[in-house]
Image (cartoon, rainbow over all chains, first blue to last red; front, side):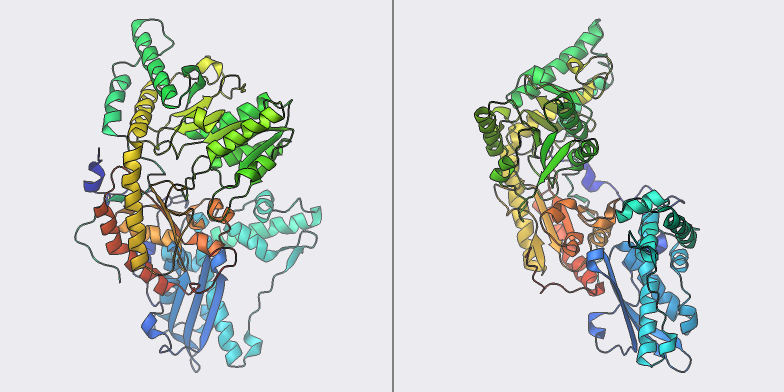
Length: 225
Length: 410
């Protein structure tokens, strides 16, 4: 009765379903490497010993992803000399944080100015791409970095350098912000109908409709262009 | 760090997704794929042989369900049977009423047609389930209105194995129809997950329609059954050559129908023995997990009569399901998760959410479903790796809600 054949079969010989357009499911070899061998994460025995001077926390487990990033910043050179992180999330969230931690501390450390310029697409490129609907996860990396650097500015009383990216209300009646649209695009929305479906709102007024469509194009270009 | 193993063992723990075709079933199917390939509608000998094989299979399935052969409609899948039951009944009786009752934890093959009907003027009441995933019979009966045409409630849940009190609900619906002197509502049950382990006697269950499929009972994929009680009118969805007494057109999938009938026969014959074997395995696995891993929760009913014997659905707090799946896959272990990360919608399991579980706990759930191929040695192999995977992911995770008590779900 037992089906013995499966037990002995070599399932390591896998079908490669990674498509260029990101429709595939499996991850790139780089993603896999970082997922199975994550770099620079905060180990239990380093807690309290790793002397950071900046910390950023973004997301929440309820959303599916949460990330904490600790930085060691040299005040003179403004270089990130070391970092540690922890991430709650799927394979790509863990891999993208790991890859970002490498990007910011390699070659003697990245300057704060450069670090603030890191975009999700930089991280994506370094990862060798992700399935489209997984892109959302890797976006947390740059947000955590910004949060940590803001924390550093706050601690060193450089208040004028803090970057606040407050949400801008695009449609007052529907209470849609640019952040909402960004989120919807990251989840694959390409048209105003998609955005409405994701945000579960009704039909927008003609004037805000134009602004929403413009933002969809903008974010689509930013992340997938 | 994760253990390095010399030998990877393939352990398939996803039998609720699908099962392999049993050799005994493949053997009875094979001639009908090659030599006995006739179309059952044809009048010559080859066609008559195929017709006889389908007719015998229909009789066998009917007997196993305590039904008549004319009550059995062969379809292309469990999903098709669910769709036919819901659209078929609601559209044929829409002059009499527009109300359907169902559960919030149904399979998508039931939920999607209901959502679609709701768009065109039908009304659906979704009965909530308790924290253990079980529904209260009274709540279902109280939701019946004078315009309720159909009650559709799954026999056993695919994600966390809760077995609903179908016979009790069926009996109460019969009582309602008698006291109100009405033929409505009809009662449909999706029994895809139940057919391997539970009694399918439609007279004991008091169902008017019931869905089964082949790929959960070691039969082939691409075949399903809809049981339809005599006298219940349905509007067919697929029109054509008048097969299945005009209720489902399309040349009969002869080998699959034969395979399905054989699979159901074996499943029903062996269900008591196999159920107790698998229950012992799930109990053993759950005990090992509790002994070796902290902060774990069993989702769904306690292991026992209200739970499918082959199902374990567990939340590992503070970590995410897809990451666990990927690590387990590296070691040859196959299971599934209720985490959003593996779903197209990026929403966590609607079943776990409907049971009142917070998002962060649903994200960390794994479903293990056992079957014929599994033995204690599989569990011992999994336990060599699983605690290390959970430990590693917990070290990577910034979340620590082990001590947090959720008011709604503990």
